[in-house]
Amino acid sequence: LAKTTQPISMDSYEGQEVNITCSHNNIATNDYITWYQQFPSQGPRFIIQGYKTKVTNEVASLFIPADRKSSTLSLPRVSLSDTAVYYCLVFNNAGNMLTFGGGTRLMVKP
Amino acid sequence: DSGVTQTPKHLITATGQRVTLRCSPRSGDLSVYWYQQSLDQGLQFLIQYYNGEERAKGNILERFSAQQFPDLHSELNLSSLELGDSALYFCASSVGRGIKAPEQFFGPGTRLTVL
Image (cartoon, rainbow over all chains, first blue to last red; front, side, top):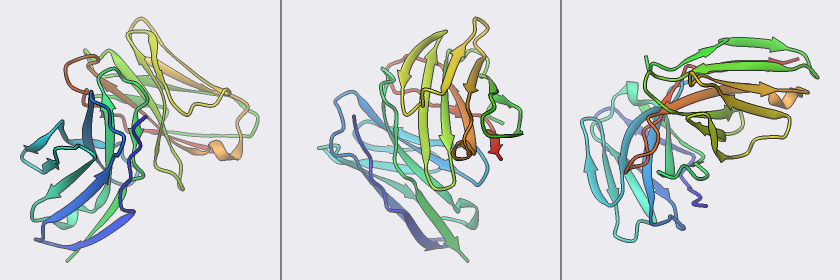
């Protein structure tokens, strides 16, 4: 069972790049790393998913080192609307024991 | 709009009672997941169903049960309710098995208040 650890909170300012790191020391071979964003009183929303190295989409990048024991979500040039909780999830396609981290509360200030 | 619907949106009940939460997955999705989110905790995975069968179990109490019906909608039954069961309950769906871990689409949630 892969357990994840994230910082509880982070502060940033508009226009800055934000990097949120998730630790998953006992990640299994078939596990993927997935990040979700959640606004208050809403369901989480998928941001990005990766297995190794680097993945980039229109909203974020995900960096995964060779040992895969951690991953870093990178949000370029954040805005006030990026204020949310970000969850790191380690999950395999077998669906065994889905594990969410405690989430990182990101506050973007003007 | 994720395409996942949950009813009711709000539910207020008393301790000891039983309630049923309902979830309709996105069209074509075979997997349904249930999560609990209380104020002091993050998202706690409860249970997953795939095409009618239980697939994975998380921190689900014995007082809670779920099922997925042939039309793929799912119900989460909570019985002998306690004050601590007050929380947001989310349902999510995904296509199901695949090469990668599937992207989950979350519904708007049901807010349960136990008085």
